[in-house]
Figure (cartoon, rainbow, N blue to C red):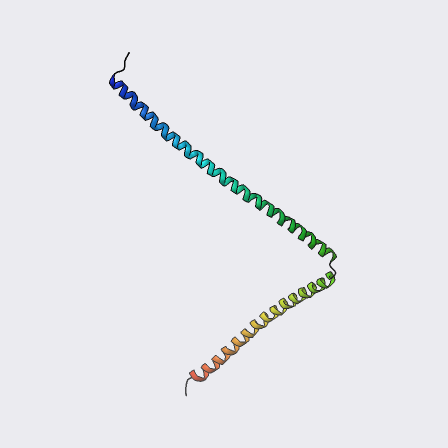
Length: 136
């Protein structure tokens, strides 16, 4: 059994079509493999950076813990604690004194403004009566 010329041409066209699709598929597969390799390289770099950061975070955490322990020990055994407490009390008393003085100042200022306003009104009334009074 022999194939006709048209059948051979059609089979060759189909083979070319399949070959073209397989070439494209192979190119896409190669690109995918290269992309995966780049992603793996980036992942390795990121993992190295994370390992470095974890090490430095651990060091900082240890330093912070040591400083916190020192602070607590200092607060418990400070030789100047009594003097610091006395200074705190003096500062609190000074703050209260300033608040009281500020309230008094605001009250006196309001009274002075009212008095000044009354004096200005009286002077204005006097001057108005002096200059606007009917002339006889």
